Amino acid sequence: MLNKARIAVLVSGGGTNLEALLNAQEAGALPHGEIVLVLSSNPEAYGLYLDLQGNNPTYSAGNLALVMLLKPEATVIGTRERWKLAGRSILDSEVKNSVKIFARSPTGKGYLLADAYDVTQTAGRPIKQITLEDGSKAMEEATKRLLNFSAAPLAINKEMEMPAYYDDERMELNINPNYPDHEAFAAIAAEVAHSRFHAKGGNVNYAHELYDLDAQSVSYILCKHFGIERELPDLSRLQELYEGWEPEERKSGLNCIQEMSKQISGSIERGLESPQRSRYPTQRMTR
Image 1 (cartoon, rainbow, N blue to C red):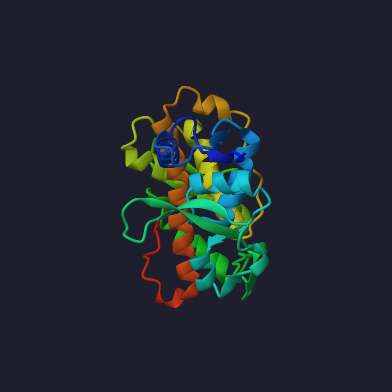
Image 2: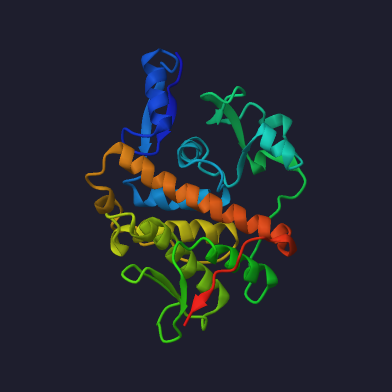
């Protein structure tokens, strides 16, 4: 008798992964599949997801949900091809112990199930890890890159009792420079996310309180990725914030968090690889 394959689901009844899985089940391609995990209504699972997303910013939230269920101890994952590019190979003893995730097909049309492995299942070159430290040139460059993602003009406010705050009425990002670099980076990341969610006033549904979990999630993912300590976002209202959302809306919200984090972290990494060739204009601050 065949065992059922346990399949993680990112949101209740929605998302590309779920749609593909349901279609596959209906077609008989996954006759032993069982949907068992919902992230968007489980604070503990959501917190674990943020940690994993921070270590794997380029992978979709749906793929990381699959990894969380099938290999909960995983930290950094990759397909065989990705590990090869990183100068690592799959251990012979681990070849058959992969996790199935979705990957774009070689033709570029549609997705296929691909084998993925945790870093502990590989051997080779050390993994590159960027750690941003207070007072370092890397932190300075990273913060500049982060600020360039603000959708609002910047303003210095030394009287403010926090490192950064997005004023949605004036549509400007206020910065207090009198805070340690790591605190400033975490706060700026969240408020930059707020400015982008507001989209220069184009998002008529925007409210700072309603979008704060998403913005803090972006900040946490970035801090996790660059070795900056910060607390998990307040997840006590997770279920309340997602209550009444349609599956497509949940998927869109989680995709925005992942995509924004990926874009910002990618820009920072490129800047740190060759900051002297950076062509990003520095945001000008008003007083």
